[in-house]
Amino acid sequence: GQNIDQPTEMTATEGAIVQINCTYQTSGFNGLFWYQQHAGEAPTFLSYNVLDGLEEKGRFSSFLSRSKGYSYLLLKELQMKDSASYLCGLSGGYNKLIFGAGTRLAVHP
Amino acid sequence: EAQVTQNPRYLITVTGKKLTVTCSQNMNHEYMSWYRQDPGLGLRQIYYSMNVEVTDKGDVPEGYKVSRKEKRNFPLILESPSPNQTSLYFCASRGTAYNSNQPQHFGDGTRLSIL
Image (cartoon, rainbow over all chains, first blue to last red; front, side):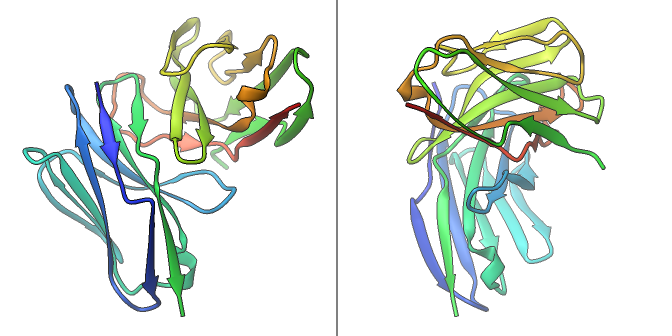
């Protein structure tokens, strides 16, 4: 089976850095996605990791350790508009994407 | 504009009254999928389709049906809705059926309330 864990909620200050962790157990692994979802809106793609290491995209970076079953999303120079839920999604095969429950991030002035 | 379109966006209905949520994509994508999203449970896959006339169950298929008669459309059918199907539903698609490295594009969601 597959299991994905993320913290339920996090808070951070505008301009700061925040790290959102995701741990997983799975019998099959192709890659790991991160999506952003503002309240009441569709999830939008942020990043994808298939190999170990850090992928950087502007203010957002994502890290993967396959041996440890661990990923994190790093958000730098936080802005108010970054207040959203962040979804960790495990690609375990060509046919499905399994999501964690999501981490709700609140950015305060 | 490339998009996944769901209709209706909101629906309140009663137990047992058949309903269909439509999903259409204009990107010529092979793979399409339906999810429901509930507080504390995240997105859970209901059904997916690898191409026309090829569909299969996801993790929570009970009480739902789908069809894929055309590549662009993937409707979700609730034959006899029940209150436990009250949820936020998302349709998603990606280009190539067998390339799981591609991100999925999500529709704007359909909020269903079954009374």
